Image 1 (cartoon, rainbow, N blue to C red):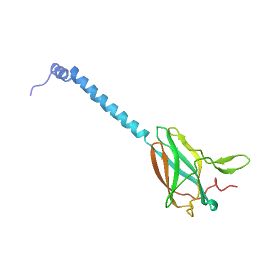
Image 2 (cartoon, rainbow, N blue to C red):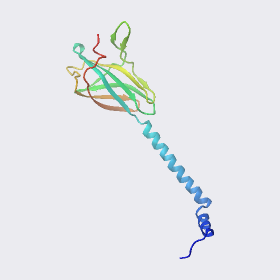
Image 3 (tube, helix red, strand yellow):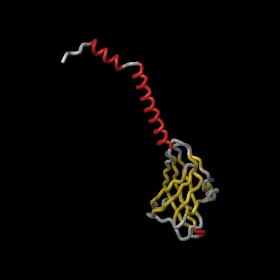
Image 4 (tube, rainbow, N blue to C red):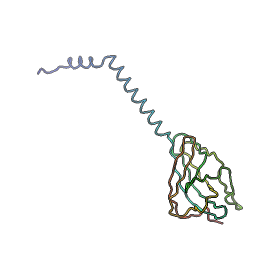
Length: 171
């Protein structure tokens, strides 16, 4: 085998690094970067909602279930929540217009007005009220299914209820 000298190396490199090969390499890298960018955009903007129940209560009059929850849009795109339902044997939808939860001298607590618009990575604390739920009352440790209806499709969330806290139980 003959040792290669510097001239031979340079000629081999110049054969590989032709204008066509460099153009082809740039085109392949551009395609890969564009594909990666589209994939990242798709993954970061898909609907990702977290739904946490902070407190819950049941009132036998009108068979009302109330929850105090945190709705969080974890997506990089805005989302609109048009309704939320709770599922027992059937779906019970929350009240869509503001209803009074509690009134104190210092504050008036109401349910939100739907639709709820959440910007990217925005969250909201809100009270929800589900009426005429029969004897289906929310109880600590019970697993409950919620359906969150958005402008990008419905999202099902199963939540195990915590011990009653404070927000719906102060007078």
